[in-house]
Image (cartoon, rainbow, N blue to C red; front, side, top):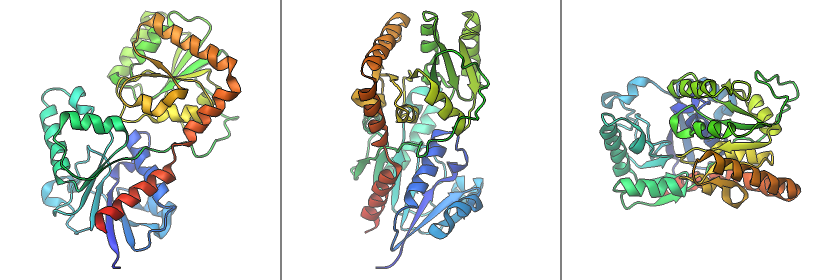
Length: 357
């Protein structure tokens, strides 16, 4: 059997603070544990030397150039398979070759301004049209795509992401930049409107014995709205924003929080709840989009965002957790462990083999 060449368009890997950067890195890390036999996998990155330092000769490496986003300067090598690892990538192969598309979400259908939406829809439709197979990171992402687009009659697969926490870190030396001397709830994510932090801050107006800590890049428009909401309601001594945190910081807050809150109204997947479940922490999620797939029957759900209602769900859930702590902690940790990047990577590799067999 001749060697098959597979190109992974992974240039987002350098932005590890983002969900897509995490996906790229964890997929590659999972693939590195497999035996490729007669397959050669090439990774695209602006800093291929960093990947080579970690993964050595397990992969081939291609240096990403922003020029390759333009049709005239597209990569011309005829790989046996091109894997477009997310739906927003503007880097495409020059030639018509086997093409696998991974769809994380199509939030752009609802989120972007009217002037951008037609272009993004057109580009995504073109990716669908050229695909020989499509993978989705959740059943919701698949259903949502079928609701809004004509999906070609090609093989489709749902492959869940793995848990990014593969190692529990020693957080004993971590120094928090916000107070942790009082019981607190925790949340983390990008400061964009669909994360719906407004809802849990409004709920905190009704809660006096706990603080709320939120991590993530708040130096953007929605971050300013959240800061104003905190200030307008005199919650500066109860609701705290840490900004971006290290992996050590994230694990510190998850390990020490009373509960993890994630009221997002649109998620293609949702990694933070899985991370919190790794620590056996009670998880409270919105019941929107993909989150019930992630939380399963071991999580608690809000079906609306009335502050009194949210508070009732929260404290009823906490009472149930306290009354059945050992059992529920074990269920949460087991649920988190069921999301495994090695398993996910093996499933992606099986898709590669199906396409180029």
